[in-house]
Length: 490
Ligand code: NAD
Image (cartoon, rainbow, N blue to C red; front, side):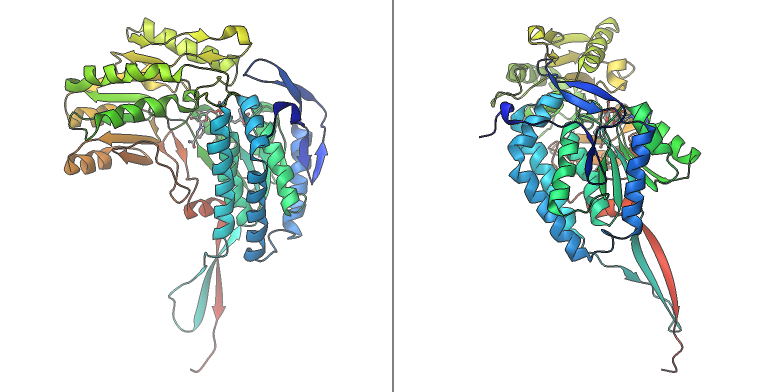
């Protein structure tokens, strides 16, 4: 049994296989209760440059990319095993760092990250290159090559999973990495890099530099020797990432951004109780800090009252509690800034005329942590800010519609297009609506089904590119064509 008192937190950067203090540090506090966790390297241009230089050297001398795919597989499988061997430690660190319930940090975050690393390790010696169907006087090989040095910038809501979705395919393909975790949740990323070394990933291949966005993220995105930048975060910063890629060396830029996912429930929904459980459970999971949270609930007007009655009955289940306790399912928001943002949106919803029917307030303030009640607004219209803007907290906006065309029009009336759902017993309606929805993923009669085998990402301002599945290799490899002349009389 691993306890908080057993944790030895180390916030120093990890560059070229060694811990590096860096020129400056910041104090990392916990959103659970405000306690100081440790000092963390406040990376800047110098530390980013050091890490990129180490990653470039590792890439050029081929200490990792030069290994046969089956050898990289063995190391990545060991890396995955090490995550599982340290699951309790990693889960506790994640909870203290960003406030999510430890039961989910253990069961979801550690397991998903480990599974992702194993899956790409297992995959890499099973994908083949191509030979083009050209004439017999030549042979045209189409091969995939690693891009080179990959900069990775991730957010704080699923720190290990977001990192794994990028580092696993990038490492499997043979790239070198400089990862900048969020300043709000840097600790598990640093531990992952240590475990990678222990598994046999050579020094310099996987570097981690913690720090703030403008101080460490920008030098990474602007760096002339970084070949690809893989970003997950807000749409606002994602746009800047594409600009920085263009202003520097035209590095490949991939962005997984925000969402305001519509969840459409028709009156002929096959199982109303399941729909209610999914609507409430998915929007409050991870304190509502999920990019794909179904935060816009569109219910057919004829069943709205019945639906909301059932939804309100579930709300007490999600009352916030100390996330270090094993039964807690709603923990702390990541910090005071995020809590104030969420409370600000709740105030905006009220002033714009939406009806607050559950929650709406900060709770557990005496703990020194940042907790907000699960909150539901009825009577929302699509022009309100709480229908259009990503809140990233436990707030559900409920709208109603009268027919499928209106539901689709409202659902698509958004700058985002990450996920969507439709609940109906009518197979034709399900297909028609799913096809009409502008989203990277559409769920039918369920929400939040997830598997490493399927692509994840959005359309419109939800970003560019896809994480997960074999398609993620497209981000971290370049196609090369090699023409070989064949002079043969046969
Ligand atoms: P954020 O954009 O504020 O920060 C994300 C990362 O970018 C952090 O590491 C931050 O330090 C860094 N950053 C900030 N400013 C930067 C700059 N100028 N240059 C370079 N880097 C910079 O987002 P956040 O608040 O950490 O995360 C929440 C957002 O992430 C939400 O919008 C959420 O929807 C999105 N998200 C998307 C997905 C997805 O797969 N689509 C998954 C998880 C989270």
